[in-house]
Length: 305
Image 1 (cartoon, rainbow, N blue to C red):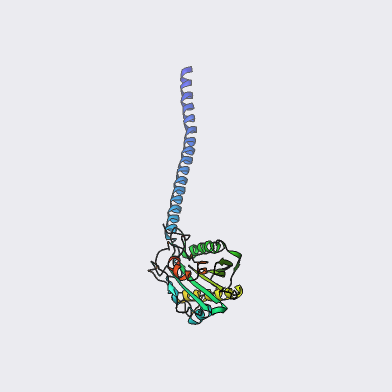
Image 2 (image 1 turned 90 degrees about the vertical axis):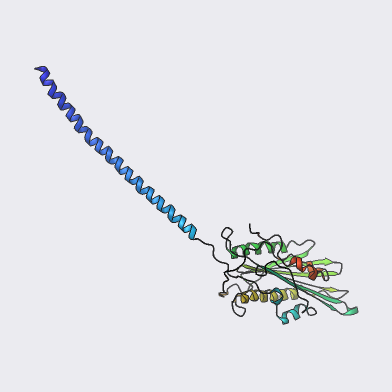
């Protein structure tokens, strides 16, 4: 009798334990199921986000450079400007060698006004043009040109044996411009050097202009030479804009709205650098002789890998 009573009790205990275990398993199963679904959603979201990011990066193409070509360097100045700056050398323009005329160019002029026993006046003018193309890895042509402009303006202040070095920003010439002036003493006399470096979008323009009074003639005033260099730089900037379809000199100033035409066949980033000519014209006749070397931009330019 006792055993008979125990058996139903044992069966009832097992049933209750089993019944209690069912909700626990269901809850555990529910939690596991919820957790699994959440992880799946998160994984899908991460995957979608990654795909979207990759697509965005692939679509983020570097902006095309504004200017696709350069003007002929020996034609950037008007005959009037040449007459004012190099009165005895308007026809002396010598173009430097360039492997790619759409990327870099250079031209120089020299003038010697011989007054006999009263001395002589010497002038030397050089313009260098350097264009940067946009690069997917290194950035836009404008960015590369701006970096080079900064470096080149610093180099212009570091000429060996230069005295009375001064530097100042110039407004109304391209996007940014710096004028560097100094005196350079040579055996022929003291030369007043003016180097104006300016950037117009993705092109860096450098104008070197110096003068000296020789054989007893008075030295030219640095202020007059600086004014002439600024005039020449503005004209060179206008020539760059016009060569790219920007109209009659539009865009010479930093606030210009000129929209030059683009050229799909533009060349790659320059591997040379800008003019090495600062101070070179100080040697009589040396400006022209060295123009082939200075035509291309100096070794300090950013090189394309």
